[in-house]
Length: 99
Image 1 (spheres, one colour):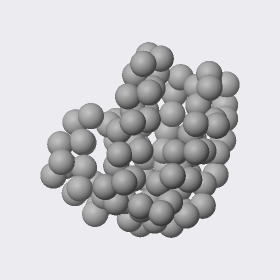
Image 2: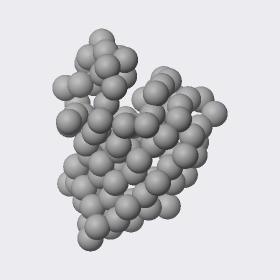
Image 3: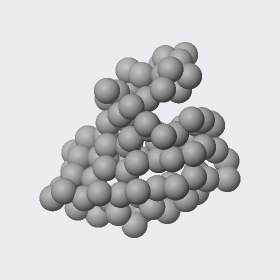
Image 4: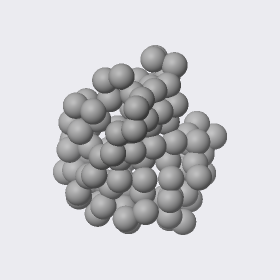
């Protein structure tokens, strides 16, 4: 998986490419740990991410909680049909802002 970050003031967009799985979830977590200081608006772009495992979902949930603790927001963009199905089946589509 490859990660690309773009900061704009207090906003951060992280674009994911490849698979967010057990092996790569730690990479996303490390990237977010490094980049989230001072961020109030986080967008995770899944346009080029074709798979998300339960380990990836854990990172997303923990990041969501972290953003809520600082009264920030987190949104998922360009979510594919398979990933959207997983979010809907787990009820996480009601938790995350998805566009």
